[in-house]
Each structure stands twice: as C-alpha cells, then as structure tokens.
Length: 468
Image (cartoon, rainbow, N blue to C red; front, side, top):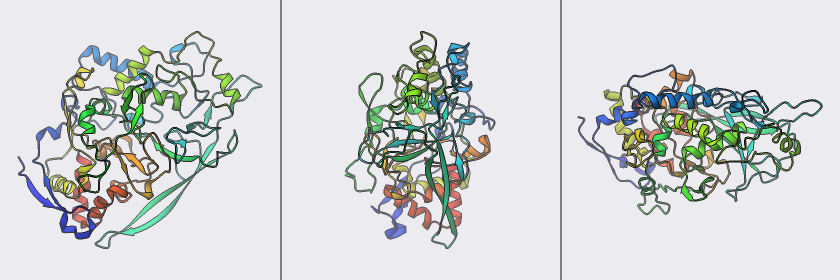
C-alpha cells in the first residue's frame, strides 16, 4: 500500500487560486478495476464493445440483441424489415456504430468542406437554453433519404472546417502549438441561419461505463454542487436541471456535453431521433421544421401502422446494451511513474472536477451495476471552461461557457483500440497535453499548475491519466 503523502499547491505561488494543502488519498487496489465487478477481466485492444463481466449468459444474450440495433444500419421506410426502417428523413448517420467506432469515438474529418458524421452541430441561442434555429431546428443534419422521383429531399447542407495555429510555451521554455477550429455551415438548403443562431460542435463520445454513470445516486452528485463557490476554491460545480422527455419530471442532467439528458435511456433516445431520425418512446416526433415541408411529408411515408420507429421493447434492449459496455481494467497504474503522476493530479487540484470515485446506488434497477465501487474521474457537473472553449450556446441551465466534466477512465486506450485519438467536446486536442492546455475558467488554476511542471512531471501526469 502506498503511503499517503501531503502535497501543497502553494509551491506555485500566484499561479494557483485558493492556495491550500492538497492531501493525496492512500492508493486503493479497487482503482485497478475501475468498473468494479463489471470491469473486463483482461485488456482488449480490438474493441470497447464487451458486456459487463458480471452478466450471466441470459443477460449476455440480451446485450448482444441490443448490440444489433447499435451496429446495423437503418433504412428508409417502408422496407422489408420493419425493425430496421424509419431512417431520417434528415439525419447525421445511419447507425450508432458509424459515430461510435468500436464503441469509442468516431473518425474526425480534416480541413475542408464535409458532410461529417462523428462531429455534429447543435444549434441554439446565447440567452435561451431551449431555443433552436427556425429553419434547421436543434441539430444540423447533412444527409437526407432518397425519395421516389421526381421528388428530391435536400440535406440541410455541409460544414467547412479550418484550423488556426496558436503557439505557447511551458514555464521551462518548451514550446507547444494548439489548433483552434473554425466552423461554417455552407450550401444551406432551407435558407440562412437566424442571425442569433450559434453553432455548438459535438464529437461523439466513447460509450463504455455509461450505465455505471447512470447508476450514481443523484444525492451523491448534488452533494458536490457549489454554485456560489462557498468554499472559495475557484471551482463552482453546477448541475443542469432538465425535464425528462418521458416522465415530465425535473431531474439533474448527467449525459451530453452540456448535461442536457437526465438518464442513459433518454440520451439513447435523443441520439436515435436527432442523429438517425428514429422516433421512440421518449421522442415521438421527427425533427423536420416548418421550413422543410417535404421532410414533413416524407416522415409519414412509412407505409405501416407502427407508431414508433423503434418501440419500447427494442429501445430498452439498446439501452441495456449501452448500459453494460464494460470498462477496461487499468494498465500500469501501480508503477512508480503512474503513482508520481497520480500525486501530481491531486496536487494540481484536477480532482476537484474530475471526482475519482463513487459507489453506485444499491437500488439501481440494473442489478449488475448496483453497489459497485467505480473510478470514472468525473463529477458530471457543469463548469465554466473559459472563453477559449466557449461555444456561446445555452442549453438548459448551461451557459455558453459551461461544459459537463467528462469521465477520464479509458483515456489512454483510444489510440490502441481505435487507431487514433482526439479529445474535448469537438476533438480539437490530439493529445492529452493539448486537452489540458485548452482548459480555462474554473480550470485555469489546474492548467497553470500543469504549465509550471517540468517535462518529467508533465510526462508523469499524462502517463497516469493514460493508465486509469
């Protein structure tokens, strides 16, 4: 057992806010299995799609049944197989797998004009968390189904992407370069965007461990809320409050980059209707706007009596599969270098937002996920991340500078499993170091600590993050 050590953030002087001692918790061997009993027994670098280790055979069969709705492409209705029809009429991708490759993050496109899948664009306003664009709705969709001639349904348009280089250096003089993305919607088919519409890029996240995040009790999360920063540490955790599309009850948001969905079931349903155009028990209507009459007509051409394009039973199977995608075990977490990086993680106060551990609720309805000690490194709360990462879009109670803290588990497996890696809400950071350097706002003090570290310390911190 590694002894508890006492480190102080004050060694950086004015670089850190709320200068006070940071106690590094004693290392627990439960950290080696971040998903508790659900954790995959052996590391697998071929795919993130594995059922929770504690699922029995019957439940594994349910998992793989749900996986078929994640994997297989949807087609336009009417079709021979009603379980897979209902695509669009406007959409971002034909399957979940297209954006979540191997259960991880999708493949990004480079500079130029594209119809991207893994990178989508939410549309909204600066001052209204529920507003959408009059012509294009709440999400830009660059694909459309083909209709019988002579009718032709136009996709909403394409996206032009370019990058601006920003140079800087660490305290020891080591230079770095960041790439700032600029986005513009072009070839618009339904008129210009409203003058006050803002774009919010969203890069498809990895899916493992989602059920465990869903299983954290609301009480344990909201106990971390500190909107007014009463403890004067420069961190103001805030939880989005959203209305469940199904129950119409207010809940805290915990999924989505601005925590706009209250449950994994709701998040899955939102992805079905917004990304693929599949109506479901949560969202029963398509996303066509009044400026898209042909889209509205096409959505009624199903040719069958089924009210929802994915009914309750099949939606539940898909959610079950998503809830039980296993977290991989940690790698070389007990090594000296990882343990040094762990100490630096606490020293830089990263744990104030990236809360290391929870025990999931004992009464969570999916029994395999209940009462598990997990290590996701997130508080699922909203934080002001500074102007450099701001998108200007309000979403529920989240303002244009606020983002939900993402979990860090499995961070170091992206490149091994997918063959590439990208970080942050729009994938702009191609390395962990770049992701840290983009932090601002409430995370400015932690970024400043990282910038002040020497090369060996920076390497150790990043090494630790890649092992968890």
